[in-house]
Length: 186
Image 1: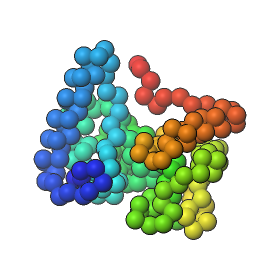
Image 2: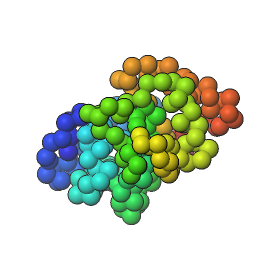
Image 3: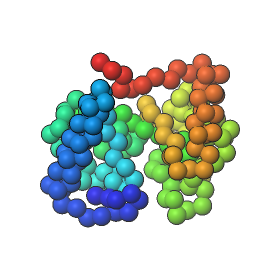
Image 4: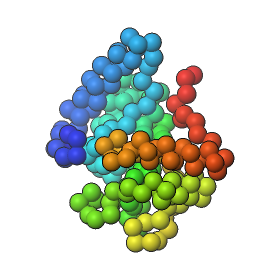
């Protein structure tokens, strides 16, 4: 399991219970506001851990299914967690990161490495247009990788995050690329 960007070892049963508890609380607040939770995106180090750790990933899936098996799990595009969740009966949404560099294997470049976080709005928008049109991105070494994603993330704590998101939207509109919610109200 994880707290923010720090890995923590947590028993899978405890992790499933934590997910269940947090989703139940969040859904209660959403219902009080006249809405409901529609999808789950684990945060930070937990997101990265479950992308490839089947034991921890299954614990998150178990917690989601216990509260509402109709919830969508959002996960890293091309990561094994998506197939694991599908096999467990969950709908999934694959996510790409606009403001992060990728390795030639399609994984995120560690934030500890130079060039891991992208800042140039125009270049980021170019990358996201390429992703939407061709399903590919340029990896940090210049190679082209396939990334099948239905959602794009811009980290809110990235400098210029709002401007980056606005530029992506502007470019998508200019290119005739439709933006819509994957979790529209039923």
